[in-house]
Length: 236
Ligand SMILES: NC(=O)c1ccc[n+]([C@@H]2O[C@H](COP(=O)([O-])OP(=O)(O)OC[C@H]3O[C@@H](n4cnc5c(N)ncnc54)[C@H](OP(=O)(O)O)[C@@H]3O)[C@@H](O)[C@H]2O)c1
Figure 1: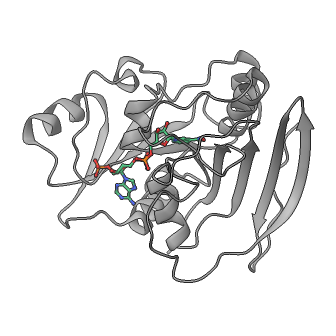
Figure 2 (figure 1 turned 90 degrees about the vertical axis):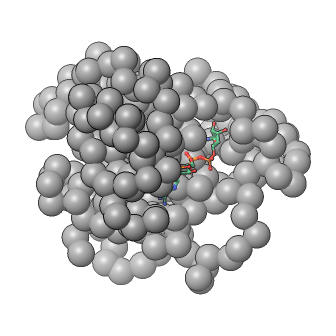
């Protein structure tokens, strides 16, 4: 099945946590990193997140930087990436920030478990793809994004449950990580792939593409160490 190139972008504490035990909103990095996040986001034809990240971080999934939007248009992309959300339960809060903005299409992959009243409301704002299975297939969603929406580069901003699903399928092609100078602690606080005790089917190997330091933060860019090796993404 054809699929887009998948770029994962996360911020992590020195003790390898991406959130707290209580799954509080993220926001523990510098303004420089927040702009870098937008820079990475701007590379994607689409931006994908899981339901919890969407709602906890109150994301509009936009691109509030005129220069980055203009650069997209010059590259032949739409001004804003398509916004993609995955949720098995379909239990989406219709007051979420994402539904308040109409700057780009919203595409939701869910299951027929989505409450009927939500289905009606979501269809008024978004394109809804419902699987009849208990769990949607991320592989099929990636293929649909490629075939139906011509998405060739997908940026995923998490959260960890979604990142784990992508890692299980071994479809994370590039990984941008910000290491922030802070410790959270807490065995229940998720790492990049969540707090689950289960291993991946096998280890996934990456090669260091670049490393940069700004202030007290470190930015690393890894690419998957598997054939075929394609040209890695370049940030300005
Ligand atoms: N540090 C960072 O860079 C960063 C980045 C992102 C998020 N976070 C933090 O991470 C925390 C949220 O973590 P999380 O793991 O709960 O977030 P998540 O992956 O965004 O959300 C999990 C939910 O998304 C849906 N989902 C995820 N993977 C799916 C799959 N393969 N198929 C179908 N649905 C899927 C499910 O929704 P349903 O329950 O509706 O089925 C699942 O319960 C928040 O505190 C957030 O701030 C941090």
